[in-house]
Length: 176
Image (cartoon, rainbow, N blue to C red):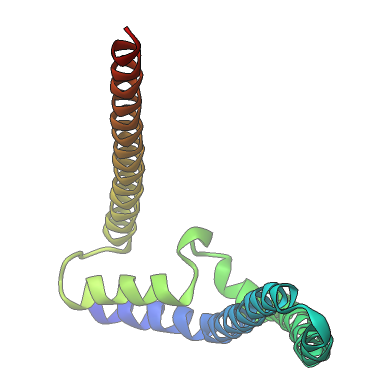
């Protein structure tokens, strides 16, 4: 039973490898484009503060960066089309037919395989339930972190308001 499940999941995982690689490549290219874009903006602010003829010279240095960003955008669009093509392939779609779509990706299938390998679960349904409960716990943790940050923000604002109120009272007292 365990070996059959592992073989089944391994076959599913092999069908998702190309899509995972395409997603990873697309993410890396988007990150690279974002980095150059941020550099372009910072360099632009530097040019604005430089002034004079130096700013005109530096402005010409931005042209290769702009061309690089345009080239990266073209590559990103190409990678998006490649990803869509891989997600639309017959093998990928056929593998998705008898499997829940929310668990049909390379990383999740790897987690499912590990859960079965280390005997945390005996059936695929138990593995699905365990992953769903972990995802739910992760969402709850994220919400609690957001609530904590919001509470800290309110606390800091109340401290600031208290300090400003004390300054106001002190200045009024001083005038009397």
